[in-house]
Length: 140
Length: 140
DNA sequence: GAGTATAGTGTTATAATATAACAAATTTTT
DNA sequence: AAAAATTTGTTATATTATAACACTATACTC
Ligand SMILES: [Zn+2]
Ligand SMILES: [Zn+2]
Ligand SMILES: [Zn+2]
Ligand SMILES: [Zn+2]
Image 1 (cartoon, rainbow over the protein chains, first blue to last red):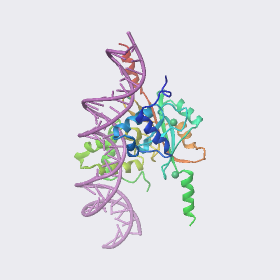
Image 2: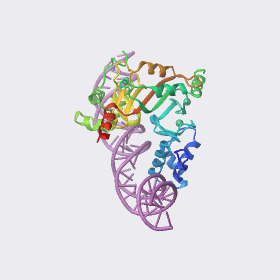
Image 3: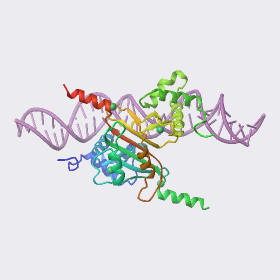
Image 4: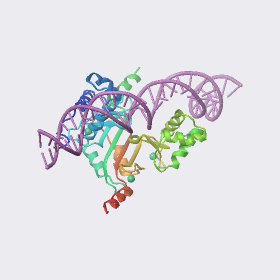
């Protein structure tokens, strides 16, 4: 039985469900306050569920934001092989699925020839919607 | 007068000096406790200096570690165009200077054609020295 | 199916990381 | 020299994350 088919525990389901409902990444303490009605009372319960969900690749941690987002790539069943774009303005995060870029990253070796198990790449910029808003504002 | 030639303030110098002395990335509160003898008393003094040093590219933040490391690339005068390799075992961090990879990252566009201002890439693996130690241990 | 290992839960307390807010001093620009 | 911008020093507090411990549920093995 592999990681993906093994069923999640109660708290893991609650936490995953909440993260998946949100378009934007969510913070641990925001998860906590939103799932208290479901019987999760304290930070460790949230962080344990997060750790497990990250381990099995259902969610990812957005390092530069200390936030958590559901995996948008169906076959992304491992942690630490992630690429995101992050809007500097609205902080929306999109998981990037670009085979050519993935290949470049997978094949990368450092000067010693070291092979890496994983990576995390975050691109920063202004998303389309925020760019349009900025153009709106200069029109006046 | 550009960013690079502008001289640093007293606290900025103290903090940068300490970071540069360390081979490994250092944590903010480790900086604090190590520079108290030089007259830096409180977290905001450290964090302000860090913010400035990051802004001018003298140091970088290692996102997955909440730690700070001196820039090893002389012409890396901007923040957020950084590539690191991180050892899962000893947590040593090396800044990677690979022109081909830089070009790939600089030229990357998402599906909307969005151009990004910057990026941060962290590779995870086992460094040469830790790998050798592991081999040593299996010999017994 | 009893025994045992493994994973998950609930709880309290605390550690580690980071920022808000405000007054004073310093440096730079005009 | 006056004004503006930056840096400093300080206290308090916010935010993010883990340690430790007793208990419960599930899976595995003989
Ligand atoms: Zn994913
Ligand atoms: Zn945006
Ligand atoms: Zn650098
Ligand atoms: Zn190592």
